[in-house]
Length: 95
Image (tube, rainbow, N blue to C red; front, top):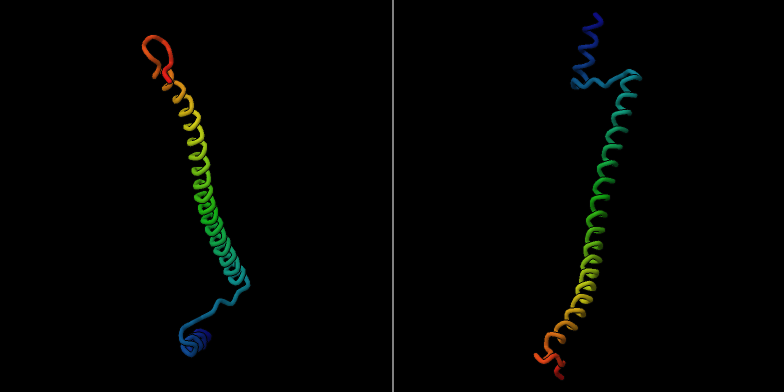
């Protein structure tokens, strides 16, 4: 008899039976919290990736500037050697 009443109630609600117990509610709440934490973690990870990419661009720019400065220093030294190479065969430097 009880099964028959339950079956009729189930038919009246369209076949949707909501969980009734407190433990089910707690489980559902825990699962929602877990999913939210997972979304937050994924968002933080994507933010870190973006910051790292932006930082690497800045680092590359700084390294390029440093390399240009170093190259300029080496070019200054090579200009001195070029004038030394332009000296005449008798050892005097031409003007």
